[in-house]
Image (cartoon, rainbow, N blue to C red; front, side, top):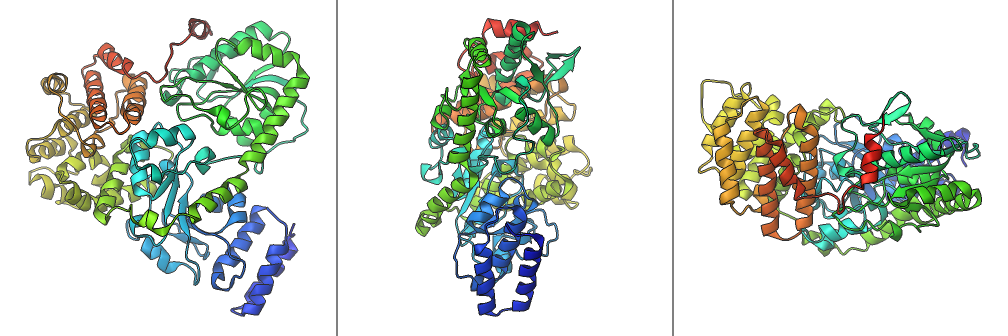
Amino acid sequence: MADHVQLMELARREVAAGDDPVALAAIEDDYERICDTTPDFLLQRNHFRVCHASAMRHRKPRLLYGRDRCAAGNFHTAPLLECADVVFLSLYGEPTTASDHLSLVPSEQTIDDIVARLPAGFMPDLYFDYQVCMATVHPRGMEMAPFPTFGSLCHHFYALRCEALTRLFDFVLPLSSPFARLMGQAVDPAKLINLPFGLSWGSFDHVLYGDPNAPRDIDVLLSFGDLSFKSGSLRNSGDLINAAYGPYRRRCVALFEQAKAKLGDRYNFVFATGLPQREYHDLIRRSRISLNAVGVHGPYNYRTCEMLNLGTVLMQYEPSFVTGPQGMADYLTPGESYVPFDDRDFLPKLEALLADDVRARAIARHGQEEMKRRYDLRRLYREFLDIALAIPRQAWLSRRPSAAQAALDRVNAYLRDNRRVVWASANNDAVSALETQALAALDLGDAVAVSGIHPAAFLMPLYKALRPSLQPGVLEGIVGPGALDLRQDALEFYDRALAAIPDPPVVDRFNHLVLSAEEGRIVVADVLALMDILESSPPRLDHDDIVRIVSAIPRENDTALAQQGDVAIRNIGDLMAGGDAARRSAVAIDFMRFWLCLLLAKTDEAKAILAGYPLVEETVPAGAQTALLNVA
């Protein structure tokens, strides 16, 4: 491992070497001889190799890495830099001076501009972003990049957004094998690369905190979020379960309470949530057994890996989602590396583990070893790079969309999965929001041209995001002149936008109604008229219609139900329809009917529609329901 003095000396020699190829080769050899996997060393070595790419003799894969999260030193940094030379790309325009960390303002620059700014001799083999569905902004011009583009998907309950991103990137990595299969029914399967965790994450063994020798004084740990305490116990806090998790977190809470009531006098049961990461890791290191549940986007989550890496026995609920078996056993050995359970066998399995410490320790050790051996991120990156670099150039060039089609795909990605809510959320800073608005405005003209859809139809769902950045008269140029400033009066704009669309399709009539409702106006007669059309003579919607349907912002009392509808109908329903165009149209019609019921305050009718799209394939066991209701 290199110490600070060695690193300073290498940096000094680099300055002194200038462009001398002999001196640079000697420094390169010295970097390669040092066995150091710390981020500080690897980042300094990467900076050297990128700056002097044309002089490097030891060729490594070269990546343009989407966004700069790795440069900040997260869990991808060291494994990635051990395998490749990397230029990190910041998409929000933060100023950077390092040659291996470039900034891009997507509304002003494209991939071509980045290529022109790369250090001499550094041409990326590929572009990669490890969680594309978590970003609102992606580079423009990827369809013209002189290298293939890859993105990892992790939040498959945003199914329509994942599909839109699959159209944007040359290749994507679904989170798991089941989602590779499901997505392959609606998109070109050749664009899907099936790797564990979709390379969004893997083993965390290299970034964990805490003392590995800490005594395990906690027998059973429950560490989910979205739970609250009252009088030292758990209770439903309203929106207890994220819609994508179905009933399974709630069931784990109930089972934990049942086990604690029966065994709490003999064993230490601990619930804790909302902890800083160090404290959270310390708590898992102190635990013999830790409970986990995954959502429809399973079969694993961060907590799965953290628990395995930290040497506790992972007991994970075996869910039964409508998407089919999650296939956890394809990744880890049940009964040897982790313990799957459901409501029927949880308590006997837990009691057996608590009573047999030798077996529990063996499972914990095997899970820890299997996680690190099979899913070390270095290993996953090397496997990914072997696959990516072997893809023939023509295989990705031949599938690329035109520039106009790519603009339409980007607009569809902006529209999807409640982007208007995301723009306003605490998880996205103001710079990101402004960039997204500017990008949507830039792409609108091409999207209209290639789709034939009236610009007002695109502008309605994008209106609130775009209006702060629009110049006076822009909206009037699309929907016609009027006395009011359309940037200030949303209802006036929605009315005139609908009037500007010749014979407006049901999607635009629906968007007009739900967006107007957000402004406090519900015209019951118009809602009933559209509901009648959707129920008595529903039209056949094509792809461009379906992706334009607004995921509206619900009234406060309807939030939980609306979230369930967005996940179960709008997204998972569409995912399960696969390549069946008629079925996808029917799902979209049902989603609009569901929302019109919410506008009419017909909650029971909305629930009846939602019942036709169960997220799970079996009913909640009565015992689990009773246990939860009895939590004080």
